[in-house]
Every structure is written in C-alpha cells, then in structure tokens.
Length: 110
Image (cartoon, rainbow, N blue to C red; front, side, top):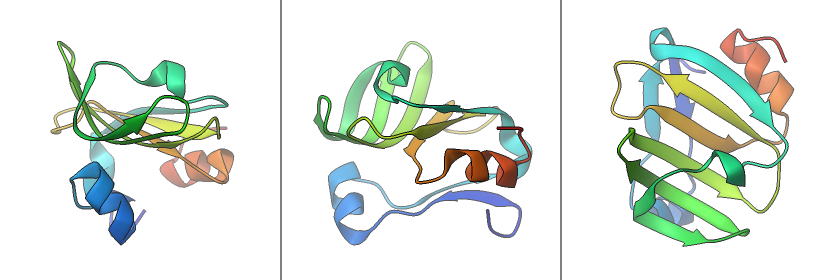
C-alpha cells in the first residue's frame, strides 16, 4: 500500500520475467482479498506474456475469457489473491511472506 494504491513491486529480474513493470491499482478498485496456502489452483487462463514453470514460478499476465489476471507466484508458498473491479486486471495473485499482514493492510480480515 502506498498513497491509496495497491502496488506489486517487482525486482529488475522479475520485471524481465513478467515482461511487465510494477502493477499499481487504486485501493478503491479492490472488491475482495483472501490468502491461500498454495497459489497454483488460483491461476487461470494462458500466460501471455510472462514466464512460467509449473510448480516453480509464474510471473506475468494470465489471459482467458474472464479477462486478465496478474501473477507473481513462487513455488508452493502462501499468497494473497486480490479481486479487482474496473481495472485492467481482474485479480492479482502474489506470493507473500506474511499473507495475513497483507490482508490487514488491505482492510480485509485474515
């Protein structure tokens, strides 16, 4: 969270892998959020563009009939799924060291 926006910060290598810069959306676009122990079942659609190796890494945009999601997922680590409305992406799926803290920061109970 920064200045009323949800930001997904990517390292230089992550930006290359995702073929994307940092993702920013207004907090007002967040309509839901929840934590997951394993993010892989949350991924949907086809990765385009980005980098992926099943079970290891998914960086970039996932496209399908639903629209687009943005993912930054590593191995089977806990993640946060942020549901959006009125934005380029329908969801953000991001590995988080402390998903519960991230949810609290977004204003959602863990």
